[in-house]
Length: 94
Image (tube, rainbow, N blue to C red; front, side):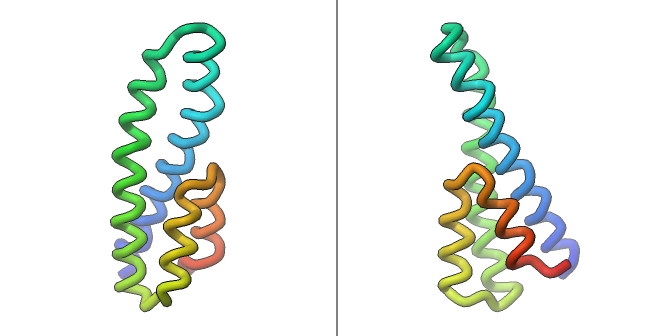
């Protein structure tokens, strides 16, 4: 099971970083400097990672016997810029 948790941690980390890059780098480039290319690239990567994160959250729900509340918090945290880091610290085994 540790490899499954590790895989979710990696996906969670990448999803959070891609969201931060999208918000803090790609979006300003698009709207301040009229360079939308980065949003297309990072946005697609973030979208894929977001879907993988939600699937992984359900996977952890089953494997770690999370409550529905924990699953809900985990999925809600996926829409917050630093949310996945919170989930990793709060709900995943060390």
